[in-house]
Image (cartoon, rainbow over all chains, first blue to last red):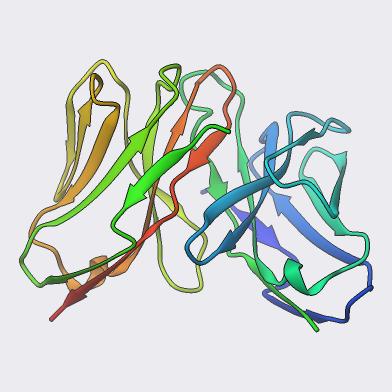
Length: 115
Length: 112
């Protein structure tokens, strides 16, 4: 069974703080993704990574950065948290094998509140 | 920006009824169309998916109908149950890129 874990279920941070969200997958997947989920807006891709040390911007990368030093771990960094980054953050992973790699496996999410 | 438009935003169906959620896409290069189901407090999970070489795919009570010429696809839940109450997301992808473009989600409530 694929397992994607996220370091925190709930986080409360202050405006201007640096925030780290960690994601770990145990299926040796090549691809990892960070989304944010907001009511009425669905899932929006922030960043993704096809390999260790590789990263690509998604649709809403502003205010975020990522790090992938190991294959199983993908971190999302909010350099200076702002109130408009209050959201649910979802991590996902998938394999690169063609024909099956489209299935993304999601973690349970981190609900971040920025005060 | 590639888009997938999903409707309705919310849906209430009586137990035993049929739930229908619709999605439309713009990019004709999309060739993979999954539906994800998300329960409160959980991440989304793949429910069912279709490729454009077929017009319909059925798995149990869940059916995807696909209309390539109209660039539309829909999820039908037959004999809807209270346990189906969840948020449903359609998505689309070009398998060469493995990125999913998600719809905005539909919150389904099946009343007992």
